[in-house]
Length: 289
Image (cartoon, rainbow, N blue to C red; front, side):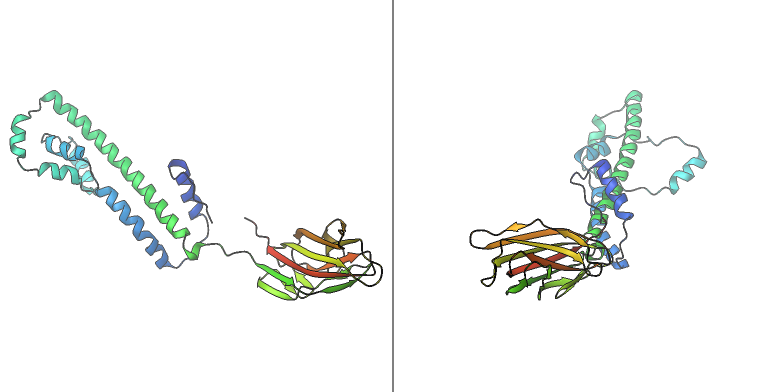
């Protein structure tokens, strides 16, 4: 999805248009029509707009200033569609215009200046056309790519939590389950004690709250890691977390999991037993931008 530039002028605007039309969008045809209508109306109104200078120019311009061209070139010019110059038309139709013409007389030299003005106005008009076309495509593209059909699909994700005790034996890496689903729009996916990263891989984070068990040798440290469910190799882990004076600790780890990988969460403590009092695991699909 192209990003709209904060500066909507000039080069940035052209870049946005190019990026938009080179980005796939599977919108149906009527969405193109619906998003085009406001942009086309705005462009039409800009072409129709005029200023008082146009009105005055239309009133004061002397007659008979058409360019001298060959008959062949004249036939070609007549084939080019002309957009109506509303300001000039109003100026020519102003009341009491004949009386004003009696006071304003244009000599040969001043009529030549009007010919230069005609050329300048023609150039400015086509510059306006280019600017209006650019604005039209930019406005149309902006509306189109803000529509539902052209928005990129959100990445897959899940969140599961544990809100009850999970007793783990000491001096062994023991699997941790997260049975309560908050949401899951996979891939990736999670099933009680096992996750699957999906075809694009994912970024996962695990948080666990731990406290020592009252029986046996009390724990002094706690650690969590994520491992490959088949090979057993460690994907990512934390350092050892020492328990505080109340015999509690928290551990949070985060890392990237390769595509098409089954993974599990394992916890370790140095006591005879340990208690994971709560925890959560979340994962988001890794999507190449």
